[in-house]
Length: 284
Image 1 (cartoon, rainbow, N blue to C red):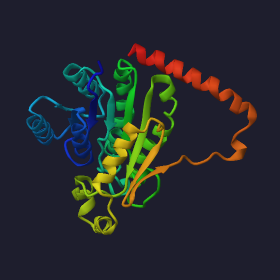
Image 2 (cartoon, rainbow, N blue to C red; image 1 turned 180 degrees about the vertical axis):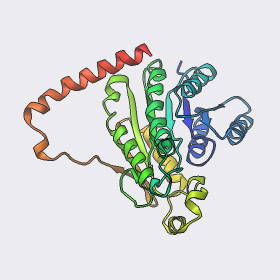
Image 3 (cartoon, rainbow, N blue to C red; image 1 turned 135 degrees about the horizontal axis):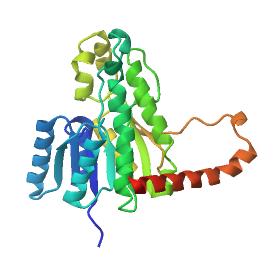
Image 4 (cartoon, one colour; image 1 turned 45 degrees about the vertical axis):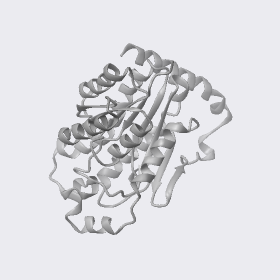
């Protein structure tokens, strides 16, 4: 007898996270939302459960920069629904997106990195711990078109999203090591609370953003569902553009970076990585 699938979504109280949660609920996938927006998160979960006339969703206050909170979130999913099959590390912030306009403050300048990068890397590590019990799973990291290109004025934010894309591409081997596929979705501007935040919307830069084309939320949801459904995707980046979903291939290697000896050694290195990570995660 197969179990009902279970998804954990950080930053799922509103915006992209909530839209994906709604799509998963429609697929009869149980959802556990972690967020700092307790009132909105609990309201979303209550609405899901009321509509289904049974418990199909749960909520937990979660600071994604803390392992303690992330472990508690995944434990809630395991205790409530039996385990975790899908993890969507979606929580993010634009606070401190341009450090040049702020005072020199060690903690404030790194806050966006703690959330946008740390929340993803820590979340992936915790997800592996739980997914190994299920024999595999799917991880989706929410990046951004800012992780593919560059934009003056958003440089600190851009740095964090480049990190998420690079991180995700580097984890293709986890498909072999854990039967866990890790992919990233990269939305262009979507009309969410993120771009309506005061630090962005209340200036000339914000006025420019509102003049830019927008990606429909349905395209972002389609990309997330594609990451779940397409078993060929591992370490892949899907762009969510105004005209639909596009797959972004990693930059090809330059010929001078590769030789035959290196190519022959790669399988052994990948096997070593897989074994090393499996042993380490098993001890967590």
